[in-house]
Length: 288
Ligand code: GUN
Image (cartoon, rainbow, N blue to C red):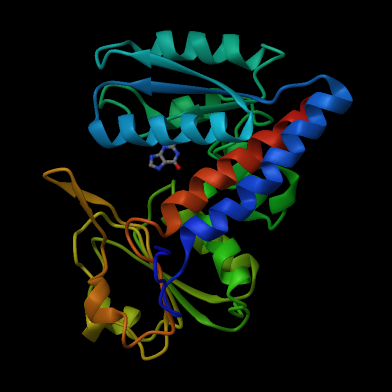
């Protein structure tokens, strides 16, 4: 039986499928016309179970679309220099077009240092400071922007949500989601507030948001009383408890009040992976 999707629930899987179909076609054309197979290399350090699952999902998506992918797996105690050595090797390999280091990394590895070591042209996650810099100056198409916020922008476009002039609130100021999401909304002329764990009076901000993006990893942080009537809400939080995932938003409570809300799972997650595939195609075209 077809899964029933309510009108105001963002269909992340559907959006991801549409992107994947395009990627599949592009992979076919690159192979047929240029004899090039797009290649993605991922690096996973340690035994963080959610990261293991995300890496698995990313490789499955590559397989579905014909992208060649390899995962380099390291034990948690691996030295930073060893990862940097591998990155240098991957940066110079012609059959590797995209490189992704799964975060979080173990404490002793400096994530900011790692971000610097990925060739900006292969940085399909958009974390290298060159790519962040392009995002910051409003030149998003020059390089790569982080996949999750780009997925959110796709969803806003798909559901024809205007961004310009809207009050947007981003809760969470990580490099992976919060900061780049805020910048992408600012580039599209929203009025943006960024809230985080040190923000006083979170509700004062969230309850005024036309567009609310929540990426904190605090299960159920946002209830019905925290959102504006008819807001558009993206739940990017993921908390694992006994093998089950929970978002940052109390979904059932918020659903009747808002015009759109993304579920967990099946919301932003699948779109993020589809954008990663799209970026791998872009890197292949730029490099070959
Ligand atoms: N950890 C959580 N989300 C992401 C992501 O989009 N990319 C990487 N590399 N690590 C993550």
